[in-house]
Image 1 (spheres, protein in one colour):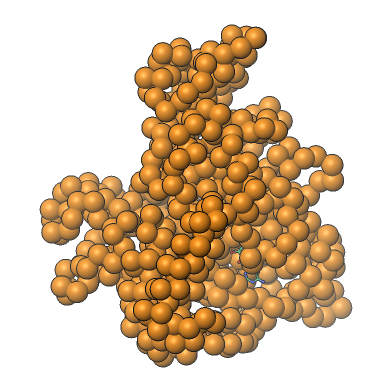
Image 2 (cartoon, rainbow, N blue to C red):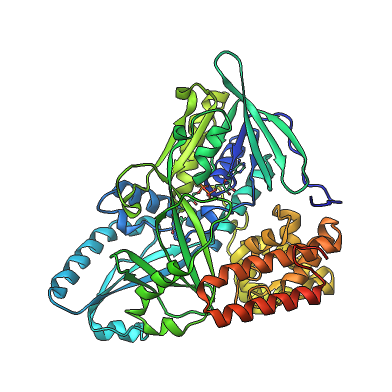
Length: 561
Ligand SMILES: Cc1cc2nc3c(=O)[nH]c(=O)nc-3n(C[C@H](O)[C@H](O)[C@H](O)COP(=O)(O)OP(=O)(O)OC[C@H]3O[C@@H](n4cnc5c(N)ncnc54)[C@H](O)[C@@H]3O)c2cc1C
């Protein structure tokens, strides 16, 4: 149990809507409900963006690969991507893609076909401010992407957008709270309450997994937005898991310590799947796999064979990837709509709302499937279904109202000068917080100790860590890392986790040993994420380094200090 001197916020005893799940769909619905004037409480079992939303490839894209089988998915994603750019411009960054086409028998024809395919995709690009594709010669390809080493017929470029999924969820949750919602993280729904002859939903029982506090919230509408956990959540209402069936699809990513290419380079795997290595902030991310998952959803890890499968694919095109340094992996589980038969890659990425009145549980709804890129539209569809039931006629405004930080565009150099902040740190702060960076700058300048850079890889200050603890629901070192990327760079937290633990303890009024314990647990998690990418010698060195750090901090195996 976490001995909190500063208790987490109290949940309301009654509300209109309880949303279960703090991924992008749950936080999106909570925001939409709050903006329409509904009373809403959101329960998240782990942390915001703990699931697929914080472990996706982070593409706010149209998904050209859905164009042939599910063009409606491409269209919806492109339309919503345009809205997301408008409401959170600071969070999006352009990711130009390049798809090299190998020389060989029939390659000219193949290049012409791919060119024509992307010609069709170009029609969707204006919806998301994307540039039209180009078809490059081998010489042009090597000029802009010199790391490519293969005999080329040419290449295709196309345009997509990236986003940090954790920041997107946090921004939605913050806006929901600023419009009256309650957001409770580390709080699991452990029963969905039903009463009366109809078995109507009357609320949710919850338990805070850090403090042990439990209770119930009365509500006539409960939204199951728990993604891949959806079937388990349906069973909390006594329904069969198949009433909210998904086909969980695991995907992993490998993180390298620097930018390995100028573009996201799209390549095929041994089984002819498309994967890519993309520059992501100052690291590179390689993803992703798609395999059926039957394990514990609270504990999803990449494995060494998954890492090798991905590296092998890129190495055929960019052999230098074999000598690049892997600094971590991450993994998530897609809540794909259930179908028996197709391979995971071929499953539909459409979304579906299940009204469990049809299963004898009026008031309970499940959100299944969908994509990060179209979360806002999915949340709008969900809120449109429940608002009239609650007598609310307000319409959706989430496509017009900026998310927190998206209110105005901040010029980084001017901001750095005005607040006396290092320009690199200022740019990072603005990317993560948009116009709200000014609030952190105030904290930074209020006290000299607040300007200390805690994580040098990601330029994260003492002030930013305190800000996310005070205003963004963070309650642990892991939570801080998800919101700021602390410890996610090349140092893997070795330089910053202990300092962050001390700040968490100070801000939340915890015993300093609890801050140390959390830092150690974070370091172990980061080490665990690196292991699949390391050889045996490096793995032993890694174990030694962590043991040394633990002993320096006085933390014994098992977390006691
Ligand atoms: C590897 C991978 C790559 C992807 N890439 C992309 C991409 O590039 N672009 C794109 O558009 N989409 C992408 N997706 C899909 C996208 O990430 C998901 O569709 C989306 O994030 C699902 O959001 P969600 O809110 O439904 O689920 P989640 O984000 O998984 O959230 C569910 C939440 O429910 C919580 N929860 C579970 N049980 C309970 C309970 N009892 N009480 C309280 N809380 C509970 C969990 O802790 C979790 O945080 C990708 C997904 C994966 C896995």
